[in-house]
Image (cartoon, helix red, strand yellow):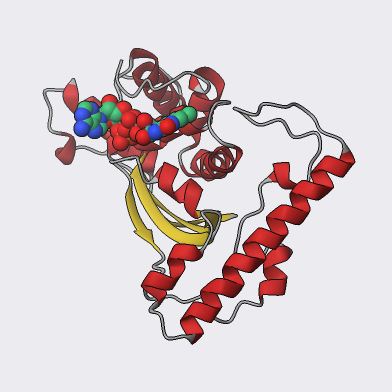
Length: 247
Ligand SMILES: Cc1cc2nc3c(=O)[nH]c(=O)nc-3n(C[C@H](O)[C@H](O)[C@H](O)COP(=O)(O)OP(=O)(O)OC[C@H]3O[C@@H](n4cnc5c(N)ncnc54)[C@H](O)[C@@H]3O)c2cc1C
């Protein structure tokens, strides 16, 4: 998987603070500089004042101002299973690579065994991997070798069958029915900072699957660079709780 930042609101934390200050001022924020808008907030520098206000908002569950800044990510090579999970979030906007208009007809099925086109879960090759809802714990090397063999055989066969159906003139939108749920997909997704925290609440947790947790960690890393006060506070004080979108 690869996650890239495509676009994001400039000065997101000025936008958050301006929105929040608007709620408590008789003056119109549109007529003031950011420094004037923040004048009565505690702190020596403007960065201190931003930290004071943002910490206060997050601590009190005043999440509305975090809906103003938007961020867009390009996500490469997640499984269709992970895509099904992330697209359940209704306040995130998505563009998902089509399997009707994009045919995987030039992939060599031999490469699929080595991880091309289909995501390989760690439990297919790691004997120490213990997943959620797994009956057994760690397994011996012989068992994991057998798992890997079955997984590789199965995904290769699916891709061979898919390509044969394409050769027989079946439309890609129908031939795709034989492909595994681990088939890779690329996406573009946009959300606001509040929603990003909600996705992290739900999908960064131990009970979420390893792949969407990895995706969440990657978007959180980017978010921390984009909106540093907010996401440093989130990571330090809020991460690990469950679904606190509203107080
Ligand atoms: C560990 C885990 C396991 C899961 N397993 C399953 C499963 O087995 N089967 C399954 O179907 N789903 C499963 N889900 C998905 C889950 O049920 C949610 O659909 C998904 O996490 C989207 O989050 P959300 O409900 O917070 O909604 P979002 O779409 O992210 O919306 C954010 C918030 O807005 C509010 N909201 C949005 N729409 C409405 C609405 N129509 N009415 C009222 N409030 C609304 C809610 O407060 C909601 O929390 C799982 C999720 C997790 C994290």
